[in-house]
Image (cartoon, rainbow, N blue to C red; front, side):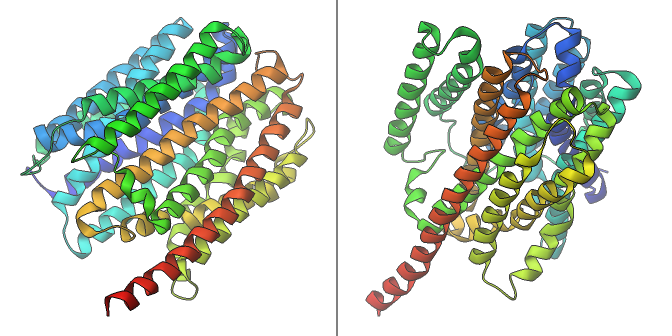
Amino acid sequence: MRNHPAIVLVAVLLSTLSLPVSLTGASVALPEIGRDLDAGLAGVQWVINGYNATFASFMLATGALADLFGRRRVFAIGVAIFAGAGLLAAVADDILLLDVARAVAGVGAAAAATSAAAILAGTFHGAARTRAFSVFGTTIGAGLAFGPSIAGLLIDTFGWRAVFAAPAVAALLVLALVPLLPESRQPHAGRVDWPGTVSFTAGLLLLIFGFVQGPEFGWADPRIVAAFVAAVALLVSFVRLQRRRADPMFDLTLLANPRFLAVCLAAATIVSALVPLLVYLPSYLTTVVGLTPGAAGATLILLTAPTVVLPLASGALTRVVPASLVIVVSVATVGVGAAWATVLGPSSDTAALAGPLLTIGVGIGLSIGLLDAMAIGAVAPHRAATGAGMINTARLGSETIAIAVAGAVLASSTGGRLADPGFTGGLRTVLWSMAAVLGCATAVTAVLLHRAQTVVPAKKIITR
């Protein structure tokens, strides 16, 4: 039965669905967690940020470990860690224990995600591989899209702990299928870049720590200042280390390619708008508007459903208009939706938010999949994996920082609690900031893509 394609697909898709659900589902539970564990905004933010930060930081390292020691082995270890941490989070009676469990879960998620894609690529070939990865991408979109509504139903029925227990149980089911999966490893895999991994992970975590704890400790507090200084120093060290390595895990030379840089910028700014909304909008809808967790999760389907439906449409659209134009329009559309969403207020209902949320969702949906294809297409074939790893790291790193920055703004405006006073003003400030960033990103992306189109013909003329 080993290497049976159907079993491989079931195991990979079930684990893939659990990872985004664990992120978006937890966001709906934040108000309940804060009340039950008597935690402020800084504490509950780490439920999301701890998971996201370790997920982002360990993806490249766990990918290298999978190449060295076997994809199935690292996949199994990652799924086991994710399941164990999820069960620990489900029984945690202290916010610190919950935050630690979530950070550990992020490490397991990174190992599972990178290995799952490699297992899928090794099992399916030709047209079957294309179909498998289409379903793989749709599953990720479905997890993001329906995670909030699933979580809302779980919370209404069983309480917030079910949000962590359900993905953990799904992971245990995947573990039962692991013995039936094929093992593979890269024949000439490189070594794990531990100095790069440590400097990047520590720098990102310290940066997140500064933004999350800044409103509580005070921005001039020596601990916050030291965290930001150390974060900058570590990230600068990371850049220098990557430049010196013959086989860097984060190939900075790719950023000299204007097309690749434009794609990374678009991907980073789009998720920087999507994920903070997935994290904080459910809290606003439950604590200010007064919706139940289930109703809040259902409202977010307006934002996320287009990410399931539109990726296929964007592929057809690129047969009519250039892919670069679709990307620029996508970034601009998300920015328009963010500006429009500032109409929200305590009396906002689902109908009032439908327009802006659908607008943001359409912009995101048109770009999903297309950005990855453009990133891989912008680099040489032998660097495709590196290009894919870099765009995913850019996404996860930027969304983690965006969540922390948005949380810092909300914490300053609400006095560190997820409560009504100041929440509306703080969330509007976040949305206007998103719109401004996306507006700038639209212009820069357009310039870079235009430059990429003019540079290539010039090179061809020279070589003749």
